[in-house]
Length: 87
Image 1 (cartoon, helix red, strand yellow):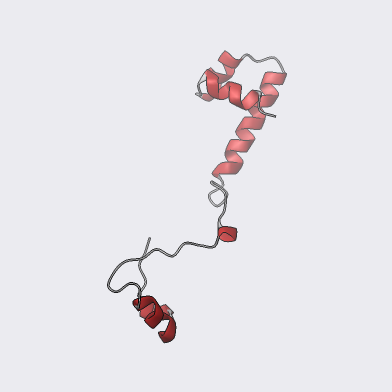
Image 2 (cartoon, one colour):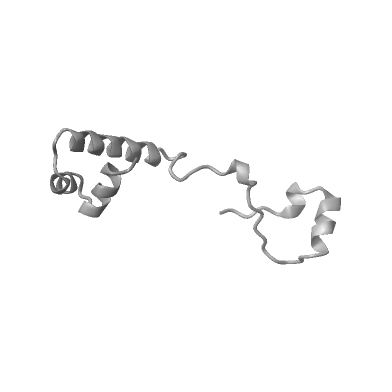
């Protein structure tokens, strides 16, 4: 996270109001809730995992065992069960 000087981006009256509560401290101002993105949507990791999970589900429907899928995808049997039995 990079730091930005408040005086460089905030209007003077807002800066003075904030200084009534905090002076010389580092504060974090979070994004609004509607600006949040789900994990992996920016990097594309979520799409890759969803694609992998769909392949695992298809292979299970076509007869591959949970042990085979765990070995093929380097995942635990419990993780494979969560993927294939998910609604």
